[in-house]
Structure formats: C-alpha cells, structure tokens
Image (cartoon, rainbow, N blue to C red; front, side, top):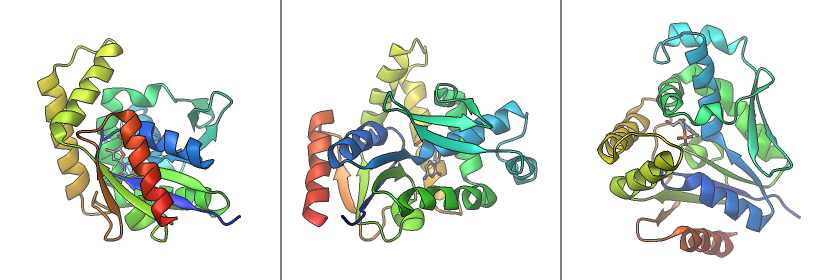
Length: 223
Ligand code: DC
C-alpha cells in the first residue's frame, strides 16, 4: 500500500488536534501534533530562564536539547524532553506563549524540520501544525486548512481551560487567541497561511462529529 500524508494547518483553537487525531484513527495513520514539539522547546527555554524571543539565548539551548515523540498504549502522543515525559506540562497557557515565541526563530524551525519530515517518510501520517502543507510536507497527499472564527475558538478554549480549573475570563482568552493568530501569521519565517492547494474547512458552525466527517470526506475525495 502506498503511503499517504494528510497535512492539517490552521490557527490555534480550531480543534485541529482533536479532529486530526480522530481522522488519523479512522484512516489508520500515525497522528503527529507538531505544536507539541514547539511547546517542548518552549518549555525548555522557560526552564532555563531564557527569553523565548531572543535567538541568542534560545539557540545555544538546542545543542543540549533532545525532543522525542512516542505514541503510547493509551493512544496519546507523549512528548519527551531529554528523556522526561512532559506531555502534561506543555499544555500550560504560559507554554503556549513561549512556544509561539520560539517558533518564530528560524534556527528553531530548522532544528525541528528534519524530525517532522522523518516521521512522514516511512509511515502514513496525519500531521497538524501551522506550516505542514506549506513547508514541512509540500507534497502531502491532501492539505487542509482548518479554521473557525476567533470568537468560536476562544469560547471553546475558555470552556476547556475552565474545566481544568483555570480562572481566565472569556475576554482574556479571546485577546490571547487574537494575539497568537497575529503572531503566528505575521512572523517572517513559515507564517501561518493556507497553502494554495489546500482545501479550506471552516468549523465555526460544526460540532466535533460533523468536523471529523467533513475532513474524512475531503480526504476520501482527494486521496
Ligand atoms: O498548535 P499549538 O497551539 O500546540 O502550537 C504551539 C505553537 O507552536 C503555536 O503558537 C505555533 C507554533 N507552531 C508552529 O509554528 N508550527 C507548527 N507546525 C506547529 C506549531
């Protein structure tokens, strides 16, 4: 059987990881959440007291940093930072900001590019991120740009955070979503944008099940 690769890009909070994980399951592909890889680098920068925006402070850390990804028996993609399981730590809101900052540094992107490509070389994958269809897998079998309005994305994220006991207000979460959209799409290198040959999927009006079906239909039509 020939390998397939499904590239799913889009802004934070569009439901990418939940939807992409389910789509991967249905298709029997490996799911790769590339945001988790950037988050792991962000966590390391934070732990080391480096300014995540400062290339001079972050780049030397890459030499002592080993990032690994492993799907375990619980079906979850675990992230390892120098051998330590940091799967839970990288989900903290503080890490979102650090990940966004380090992801704007060209040497960080170069450092992680091969790792991401290698994952898709020998296996069928569903990979989600910001630049998968444009940079990481320009020859992906199917490219999807998954989005939803900032208000809908902020509401989803706010509910998620609230369930975890976080007390941020909806307005704060919305401000964060808008700021991160701006940062991710205005950075000089690999900005978030829809690849020319990507299909646009807007989930503002769809629930989770409908979103999964929409993506599966797109993949089946183009595969
Ligand atoms: O999807 P996420 O929120 O977990 O991603 C964390 C950060 O990593 C986000 O601010 C943008 C960055 N990122 C990126 O630049 N390129 C990717 N392929 C994936 C994530």
